[in-house]
Image 1: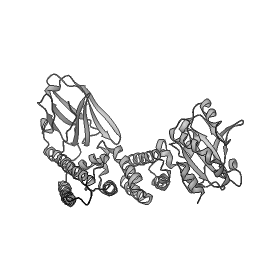
Image 2: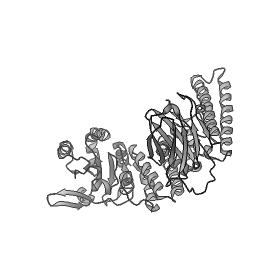
Image 3: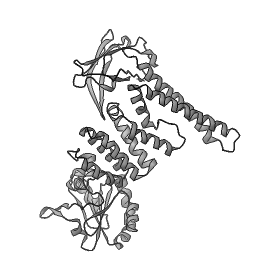
Image 4: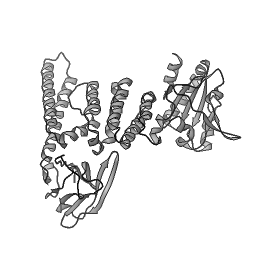
Length: 446
């Protein structure tokens, strides 16, 4: 069976439920097949029911009382296919009397008047986007001097107006359909308006995420992680304005402040994707917001990136293993009174780290000539691996506690991705947090 997106929407004007929410299923051609019924909560897929379809194909999907009335996406999952189902708090039924369903109409929904509307919205959107892509391809192929170029430009303008009217009509429906269908398109770059340039499209999607997106709807949509990844990706890869990013992060954070779990998850995922792309300067901008929110109870995993090493903060003492046991050593003590420090967190075998270490020897004397001493902290968990790599460095100060990225120094500096580099002045103040050697050289050349 092909995987079919089936959406079921009901009125949002609900009061507290007194019983579990149910979906009556009648699928005689799927008898005997095992299934899992899943609800979405942020990035979690919660399996609330597992069973096999009885011989007559009649069975009930139950939303547990602790989640009812549930408004959001769910998934009825088979080994090969299934249905993504949007719920809005009430009972309804689904039936399919076709052996091999291939289209939405093969499924019949009772107790759900809004399902055809949502399917129509998604279908119309696909149709308009298909036309836009076709015209865009022509415009990208033709030279502007071509006779028919203005004709296609005019067609695209007409399509932009049609798409805008379509979006306005969808919002006017005031139901679950209009609050969720635009979320589905965000991970694939589909916005609420049509634009020909990546920057204009990125601005539109970012504006929707920040100002118009219902974050409660997103949390149960099954696209929580994808949308946050898109938010970071658009800012880092398209908009490239750190000040706007910080403002947008704050705006979203204000919307999530009523729920510490969601705020923490959002902040953690933003940190994760920024770290993956080496954007530690972005993390430094928003770290004070996260700390001041008071909503993050434990800084672990990606959230460690907010905890230490922000530009302008005092560099944490390093905890180093010596012949006298573990000792706290100020970075300035290792560097000497007149030297700054380039503190490198790395892991042997990490692709970006290996690339850094291929470049660094050729720039080492240039760095030293600026009065900077290099100190390295490894995430290696094997003494043999650490010592083998450290022996190749042109500097002597390399340390490892063999606890990986959960080691105390990684935690104190909020390092979750490698390599991460800190430029620390002779007074022990962090001047910059970076991910690439080029950034270090640029900073030293200022």
